[in-house]
Amino acid sequence: MPSPAPAILVLEDGRTFRGDTYGAEGETFGEAVFNTGMTGYQETLTDPSYHRQVVVMTAPHIGNTGVNDEDPESSRIWVAGYVVRDPARVPSSWRSRRSLDEELQAQGVVGISGIDTRALTRHLRERGAMRVGISSVETDPDALLARVRSSAEMAGAELAQEVSTGETYVVPAIGTKLFTVAALDLGIKAMTPHRMAERGIEVHVLPATATVDDLHAVGADGLFYSNGPGDPAATTSQIELLQGALADAIPYFGICFGNQLFGRALGFGTYKLKYGHRGINQPVMDLTTGKVEVTAHNHGFAVDAPLEGVTETPYGAATVSHVCLNDDVVEGLELRDAEGALKGFSVQYHPEAAAGPHDAAYLFDRFVSLMEGKA
Image (cartoon, rainbow, N blue to C red):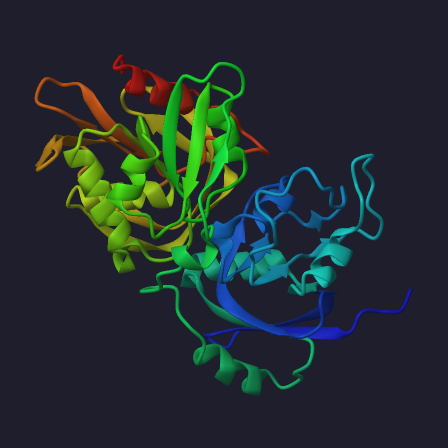
């Protein structure tokens, strides 16, 4: 097997790493972020929330189970680039159909291997997420740095429409149909409508450009907002749709980007985290029960809301329901009417996480209870 071509990685502050080409040869740019998950790399790669991001894996050995055709969360790899320390030379899994390197090459994803990902991660933790370039065709770090600094930033980027479905599709209920839910695709993962279908929900997945009329056209018993990429402060139409649904008393459930948009619809602000939460080991407390969950995260923005007390909004009383135990970041919101009945809720993490953990799967049951009027 021929040796891989040399590659370089250059951060926008000038820090440079040299390694080997992993995946496709070429050049790519994006926001450098790190993921602490030790498993589930195929789900990470195909998560639309990583659109325009270069993902650094902190686990040192990646690719050992290869790639299969059952685990992708969408129809393609969405990461802008991929950074690993020690790629597996030979995949070993009865489910594997090809190597990760082959899949990255086939989909044109530029990556780099053989670098000190621990040092890179520590640098991003200290300096914050920043723009980055990876190249196997450029040998001059200064030339690549100039192109990195001229590339697009994540702050202010509206990206949901770039990853959303072009037309509505339906995921049928498994077993007896109980409810119909309109799910706004802001970068939805395949496992999300499946988790709802398991609970007797027929899911109509709508484009990010959907209107209130589209919502009523499917006869929705509830509205769901998915995860997705980009800056929530750059979004307007989806917030207007959500506010219209809340005014019509349509039960709401949102995750990740859907939590941020819920916060903005209720009048809270959002802000960019220094380096974000990305991985499958984030401890979160459900303030409504006192239970601590280990959860899967992928977000670089968060809701700016008071952790204690009630905030009155035009749609009801809003409270923070979940908080991250690492850094007190808001991880969930609840909205209740004047009688105290739940109208909508959201979480910042991923209760559908296919790769685990599954501590938060109960939230889909809470959504069913909300539509039943029992929450």
